[in-house]
Amino acid sequence: MLLAKDATQDWGDMAYLVTQFWPGASMDEYYTTASILWRPNGLPEGEAYHAAGPTDGGVLIAGVWESSDQLESFLTEKLSLHTSIDGGLRGEPEQRIAEIGNLVMANPTL
Image: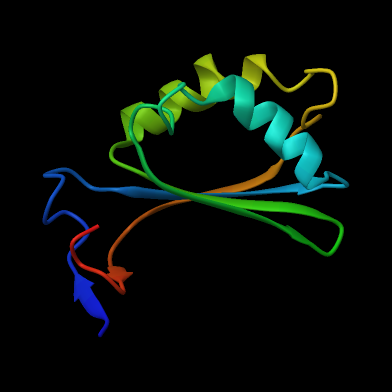
């Protein structure tokens, strides 16, 4: 059963969706970068959901963030400093950010 829920129901503030397409990137490059950016016990602070996969011409990443401050902090203080890791993602992604107006989950207990 799918449940549509207001994105602010659990977090209090607006949640944010970010997508990044890294042209020419491989999943190996993604994994190298993720291994440095992520905390040892999981996702960066503030990122609630994360998905990544190969697509025509590169790697597509989607994340749901609990707040714009946490997302901005990650993008400026972490990601921008680590885009020249040997064997990692390089350059700038094609990025889009949106306030989440509706979040649909198959399992509402997540």
